[in-house]
Image (cartoon, rainbow, N blue to C red; front, side):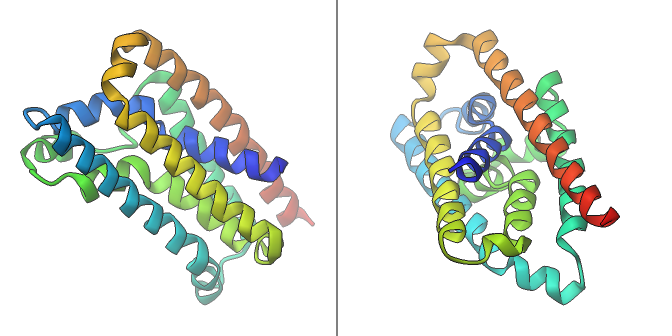
Length: 205
């Protein structure tokens, strides 16, 4: 249960749905509420499928390239630390470049890019599920079921928030959503550092 909750919290922090609200409003500017809802549903469906694919085939990918779980823990932890610090400082570089954001505004269908990837199932989320998939203790029974459910719960939580975009903007406002994103960023940094510690311990052993 502890591992399940850590996975849900880490994934949810990486997805940062409150931080994605502003981007969603920008890339669907001029669209009807019904069309925006349709895009959000499709985007999260794509994101959930991507995360599950990476989880179930990630171990085989690591085995093919001869990558150890400790290497993935350290590398993944460093990537997630960067994302966590960007959330704390409210920087957008880990999501997309300025050129990509300009291109996003011209796209009619934004469900796969940029909504599903890189906003929901971005490099950080894919790295996390890849790390879980490469851990031998997560390759059997309850752990695998727990990880799968955690992916679905985190994706579902992001979906619920982005479907309630107008409500969150009205209740929390920009400053409120920024404060929540910073808290999630701090939690993500702590989880990432723990991943790096476990990876380094494995290498030393």
